[in-house]
Length: 247
Image (cartoon, rainbow, N blue to C red):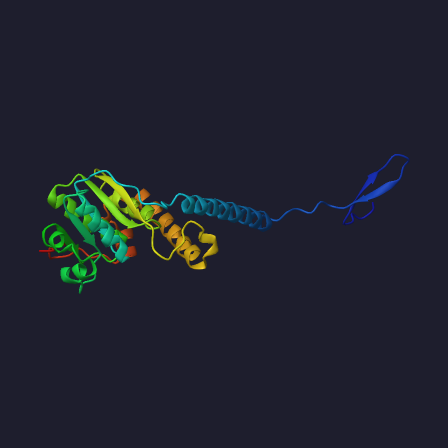
């Protein structure tokens, strides 16, 4: 009996034989690597397409909002506060919260930057010095709105920041009507962001933050009691009243 070799023999027509090489088997590691590469490519494609939709749907022009009970402006740009005061002056809301004001900022400083608005600032504006980020903005806005019994709010912030802001506010205030009023930031071209490296970088970072908030709010409840929200924000429940009235 002949010894078995590394290759098997097959009898062909005419009595000839041919060596048959064993088929190489794809290792489990290679199959797993292929799956991971394919999954990563698909994930990158979905994220990339999502970013294009995100950038394309940003508000480019401020739309006149319907009247609401009150207005909240998130700090991060002086134009946001100026536009919010204009809305208040036009009777679009009965009261204004400026959320996320620096702890040293006073009503007098805001008045100097917005001449002619001293009366409004003295009667109808509240300053929130506690919020340090968008999660904090949402928590402080909820406290303010619930304390005063508001059921609808005009939300004033930059257009690129609005999607994430609405996610946070909807999570904290699911029963309130939120009316977005997006401010187009000066010096930032969000229309042709691909021509401006700064705009592209800002929108990219904001989109990633938006995804993170969307994932977090999909599984969490009250942001004040959410470990994930506390970890991301560093927010601590204050022992003193959250709102400093600007009077």
